[in-house]
Image (spheres, rainbow, N blue to C red):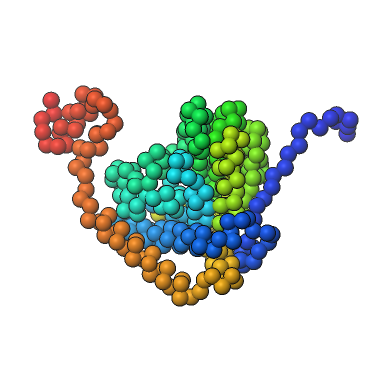
Length: 361
Ligand SMILES: Cc1ncc(C[n+]2csc(CCOP(=O)(O)OP(=O)(O)O)c2C)c(N)n1
Ligand SMILES: [Mg+2]
C-alpha cells in the first residue's frame, strides 16, 4: 500500500453507555445514584407523566382543541434523564419535542398546551425564567447554547448550557458551528443529539454516512459519547458526568442518545406512509418505561398497585391542567404585535389599530 510507513496522526474511539437491557436486567455495575430507589421512582414517574401528557395532547389536537403537537413517545428517558441531571441555574435550550424536559424543569402543563394552542402566553413558563422556549427552527438552538455558555465563561459563573436537538439537526451548519466554537473556547455546554433514527421521513442512513453522531464532537476537539437513550439510568449518568465536567471548566461534551420515535413526527404527519410498521413494533420492545419498570419490579420496589395509583394520579393532574387550559380566554388578535418592538413601527401600529377596531391612521 502507498501509505505504508506513514505515521498515524489521529485515532479516535466512541464509547457506548448502557446499564439496563431491554428486559430490565442489569448489564454492568450501576452508577451510585441508582442505589437510591426514591430517585429512580422519581425518574419513572417523570417518564410516565410525560407519556400520559403527550397522549392527552394528541387527543386534544384530534378534537380540534390544540394545534400541531410533537409527541415524544419512546423518548421519555432522554427528557427525564437529562433534565434530572441539571441544576436550577443551568440553562435549557430545548427542541420542540422536549416536553418531558420542560415538565421536569417546572413548566406547567397548561403552559405547554397554551403554546401549542397558538397562544404566546404559553412561553411565559413557570420553569426557570432563564430557560429558552421550545425551538422550532431545526438546530438554531445550538449556536444560542454556545452563546449562553460563552456568557457563563466570561462572567465566570459555574453554570452549564444544555442543548437538545435531533439527528436531523446534526446535518445543519448551525450545530457544527456551535460545536466548533464551543470546542475552541472550551465552553460549559452539553450538546445532546436525540437520535430517534428519523427526521420526519428521512432515515438516519440518508442523514449521514458517519458511523455515529457522537464522533462529530471529535472533529470539534471534545468527547462524544453514545448512550442507550432507552435506559434512563444511562442517560442520567452520562448527563451528570458531562454537566459536572462542563461546570468544572473541562469544556463541552456531546451525548448521542440512541432512541426511536415511536410516534408520527407530529400530529400533522402519517409515518405509516414511509416506514414499515414491523420496524416500529420491533422498537416497542426497547422502550424506556417498561425497561425501568421491569428493573424496579425485580428490586421489589414496584408493583401493580403502585402502577395503578400512579396512572390515576397522572390522569388527575393532566385533566386539571386541561381544564385550566380550556378555561383560559383567548388573547385579543392585536396582541400579536406586542412585545416585538420597544416602539412599534408605523405599518404595524396601523395594523394593530385596525384589529382592535380603532382608526388605522
Ligand atoms: C430550519 C428548519 N428547516 C426545516 C424545518 C422543518 N422540520 C421540522 S422538524 C424537521 C426534522 C427534524 O428532525 P430531527 O432533527 O431528527 O428531530 P426530530 O423531529 O426527529 O425530533 C424538519 C426538517 C424546520 N423546522 N426548521
Ligand atoms: Mg430525529
